[in-house]
Length: 387
Image 1 (spheres, helix red, strand yellow):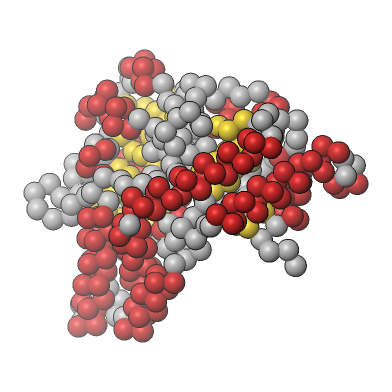
Image 2 (cartoon, one colour):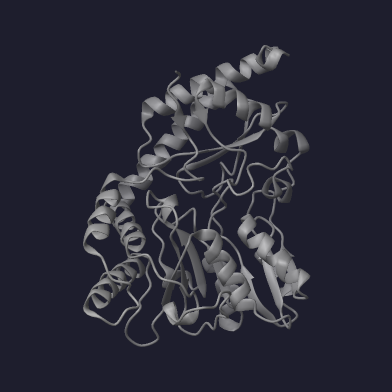
């Protein structure tokens, strides 16, 4: 069987062995429900709150002292984004501004609010994939309850100027940022960003699937989207999973121990990957190559080829990659992100996303680029799929 090279870490990352160990120890020792008042419940609560405070600290938030931030534990990035967008916007009496390149969990949440009667406006991006901040003034003429712009795009990896955006509109309008593809890849400081809310997800940085978080500034009022319990101040009811919180905390600690070295290494691997492809195929288009990007993501277009056919051919050749967001990877529609960047149909239809993780190696990058070049040569000759 062909040894597979995994280049789809933006979809999910392998869980780190130290995270598994930390969770295993927690499962063995943690017995009580953290909401129970007896000793075992209080013991579980102490472990949970210790993990919560440590996660917040690593992300530049503060849960104690004057004007403390809040960290709500969720099932992942999708829930965190929905909770932020729907919970902050609330009733249909104000405007929501959303960038045109958001993840489906933000974009479709905005669509749902629009169906409920909320006024939704869309912030465009330029051809380089950067939101056009100058358009905000015209979009925020009506009372605006929230602006949602992601910190880095999940398809292209392009970083957005969130600090500048927040500075442009001040605290008059709260800003939410989806930081799912940045946390655990680059240093993120919640308070320095100046945002009102920030979403993240553990399985994107070698933590467990099924847990994420929503950081909230002290002055943000949130409407609960679920009901049935008093956990997490009733804003996200349901019994918290102590082992999942511990696992997310440990994964974040592992990254932060050598964060600068990790970022440099991933960036070097990405640059090597892109350079080798360019050497063999000068006609490729690398989206955002002239912009600031997260170090692990590369979105490459092979003009003239069909992305779905290329994806299947690469899978058979032992290269796992993606056509875009894993939450919409089954869809055949053109990329909303690349369409917003005004890419040509030929470029959009030939684009694939490749993404690296902490375990990625030089030999994997070299093997993957060799296989990609071979597959593309075969597709152009029509020897794949009986063409």
